[in-house]
Amino acid sequence: MRHLQLFAALTAFTIVTACSSPGEGASADLGRQQAARIVSAIAAYKAESNALPATLEALVPGHLARADLALVSGAGTAYPYEYHVTSIDSFELTFRYSGPGINRCTFESRRGSWHCEGYY
View 1 (cartoon, rainbow, N blue to C red):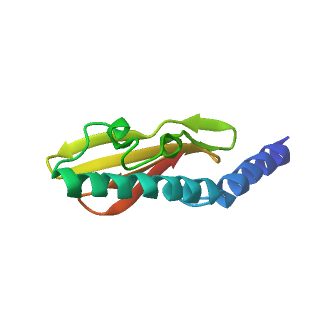
View 2: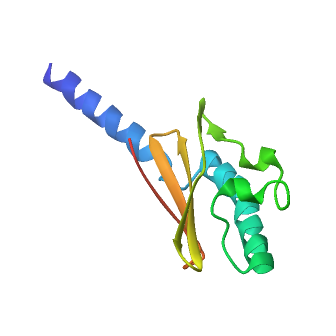
View 3: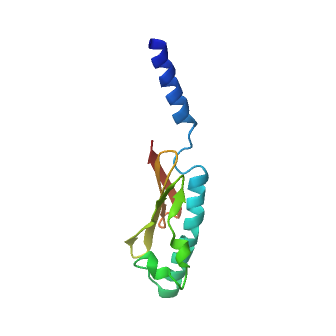
């Protein structure tokens, strides 16, 4: 019985450590690729109006097609983009995806970079 428990623990450890870290893998790459169009549209909107859009919907149709705001999908799940103006000149754009685990990647315009986190 003890050997069976040890085998199960080692198998679980191997599966978890073999999985991609949050922000890595095909689903994360797809999410960042789709979100890049939105980040560019926000920058164009700000350049034209000298203000950030209040919502992502404000980018349609002048800067994005409605399809560009479609849900991020992968591994059988779909989540909406989350957009928050954090100051007069900065915003955060977040997408979520599953597989493996539940993951969240946020673009922080103030830093110009992505931060991803998740859990199994």
